[in-house]
Length: 113
Length: 116
Image (tube, rainbow over all chains, first blue to last red; front, side, top):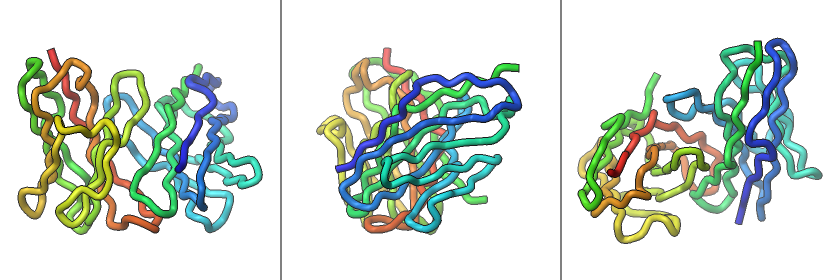
């Protein structure tokens, strides 16, 4: 069975400063890991995914995430926040052997001017 | 760019009424999913569907719920006798891949259900 924990329900950063959204996972097998973003009143959009290839994954809008097996982490980062990054971010894990995809509780990112 | 579409975007219903939420997955996708998100809470898996049958369902997906693919394009979620706690955003998703794969899930924009 797999699970995912997003350590912060809210993160606030100033525009132009780095973003770090934390995610830890638990999985019996090699997982696939995803970050999705949800802007207000919008659906879920894929930011990036890890699928057992390169451990540093680059996504859209300047985001990237690093898979660290030893720490069971898949933290999302961006060097410089933009106002348009304000949204809810979900870390998602998918196990190797089933169809079920588990969402973290989400982290709401606030960008301060 | 292909996308998953959902209707209605918002539905208000009285407790005890039946509701059908509709989804049109991306045309070459084979696996379909329903998720729900109660306001302020996490996104929860409801059910996955492949080859015209349920492949997996969560504890939430009890006899009150059913899914159907009535034709080649629509994928519906029916909620019988709605309860107040069914109020949520319901997301449909599809993927061209399934078990033992790493396919991306494509989500619709959601159907907000409000039960009064």
